[in-house]
Image (cartoon, rainbow, N blue to C red; front, side, top):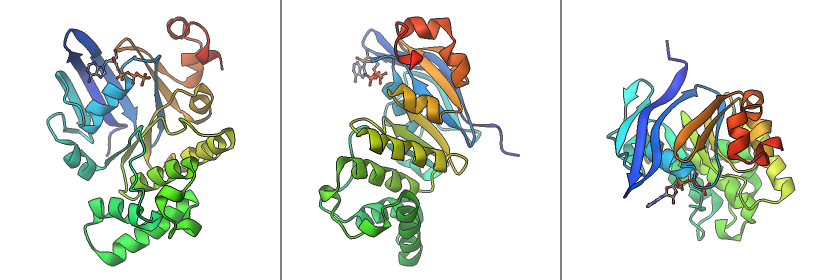
Length: 243
Ligand SMILES: Nc1ncnc2c1ncn2[C@@H]1O[C@H](COP(=O)(O)OP(=O)(O)OP(=O)(O)O)[C@@H](O)[C@H]1O
């Protein structure tokens, strides 16, 4: 039987010069849930997901995914195992159509089989509500739709684990609502690790929250538990988590 945790880190540490961007982070990600990773600016969230996705090499510690130690694997091998990661900065191909963008992502997992890629692209564009725009050039889309396209590109790789790095950053309020609905619709289908500054989005979507502060784990629990945690409130100076 598959274990409850799809991903676990133990003692995960990244030292830059004299600075510990992450220090001894123990983290468990429950399968099929939405887990938010939060923390004040500079807490180490990007460094942590960089080490999980393989973009950043850990100084020490382990990353276990689906019971396999992947600590030494390069990023492309982790993608092949089912870890998808949307970058904070839009990573779409602006000169290509939506269809082509999603097809490029689908081929990473499915190879060059035309039929399989085509049906995957169509299914994913349907799922995120962009099917009507398949032939549009990605660079002509609104910023909000470009972010949704990024999600589609992640989904096209059939991720076991989908890491969403600040997906609502720069979105208008109505677009944020659409995003919340999309994340909720994806929950259960895949496991989501959400890095998000917008506490309202976190509280509306997350089953579980893990808090980093100054590179270390500060708290971990349900949204209610984390919201009530005095150390978390102090780290945020009582502001953001009250949202
Ligand atoms: N390549 C690097 N070289 C040196 N220091 C770095 C590097 N990347 C990150 N840091 C430092 O590590 C710490 C954690 O940064 P990180 O970007 O992981 O935090 P974060 O929680 O993602 O921040 P934010 O919420 O502002 O995106 C910060 O003090 C940052 O300045």
